[in-house]
Image (cartoon, rainbow, N blue to C red; front, side, top):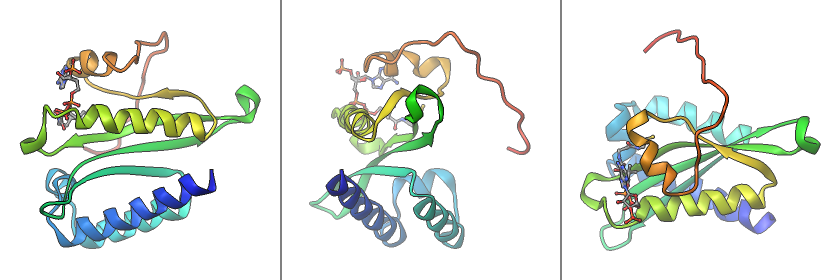
Length: 150
Ligand SMILES: CC(C)(COP(=O)(O)OP(=O)(O)OC[C@H]1O[C@@H](n2cnc3c(N)ncnc32)[C@H](O)[C@@H]1OP(=O)(O)O)[C@@H](O)C(=O)NCCC(=O)NCCS
């Protein structure tokens, strides 16, 4: 367990370094400023419930895919955890190589290791067939939201 945490802390620090120095695909997509990245990254690290998995193309030293496991601590289910999959992305030039599959499997195993009783995600209807490939099923609960800004 400690070893997994150590490895993922290393992932996080590498991710931070790579994103800041190499024009990473995630930052391209969000249009975020480096200063905002620093603040958000610091907050995520402090909360210690974000596990960011990345895949690096070591031949060019560039991160080409990323996915996040967010852990929510619960009192229910014998005080266990719920895992949420967030921000799954593979760089356009590297899609169709089973990289998303690899990342989702890593998040699945990690969520089990961290004691999650379930792993959930929210996505558009068009992405449903993709996640169903990995065993995710439509649940019985509705997803409602109050949106404060776009
Ligand atoms: C969706 C995305 C992550 C897939 O990445 P990828 O690396 O090309 O996916 P993989 O190569 O690992 O594909 C694994 C399987 O899913 C299938 N698949 C990939 N994209 C799919 C899609 N949009 N719909 C249905 N199935 C899909 C593949 O055909 C493959 O099937 P197989 O195992 O039977 O061969 C990538 O297209 C992406 O980054 N899209 C933009 C961001 C996004 O939409 N993220 C999801 C937000 S909810």
